[in-house]
Image 1 (cartoon, rainbow, N blue to C red):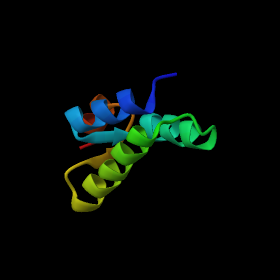
Image 2 (cartoon, helix red, strand yellow):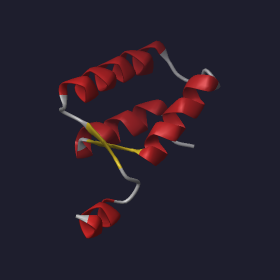
Image 3 (tube, helix red, strand yellow):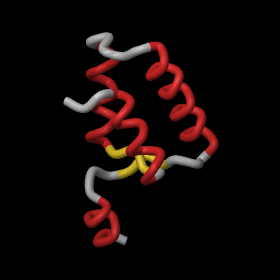
Image 4 (cartoon, one colour):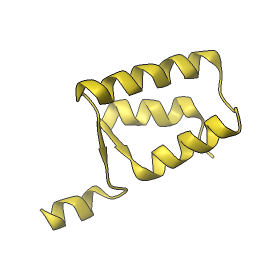
Length: 68
């Protein structure tokens, strides 16, 4: 399983939080498998989502474009 840092970095690169990534983050939080730095990054991600800089999306961007 990817680290919280790796997932968050990927989300900031793509500006899309997929359902798969969200599930992984949830699992890491439940298992308390994160550092204080990663928790701070997660807060930044939540802020970016609230401000619309990052959007929540499908696991597959191909599926999103096909349904549009």
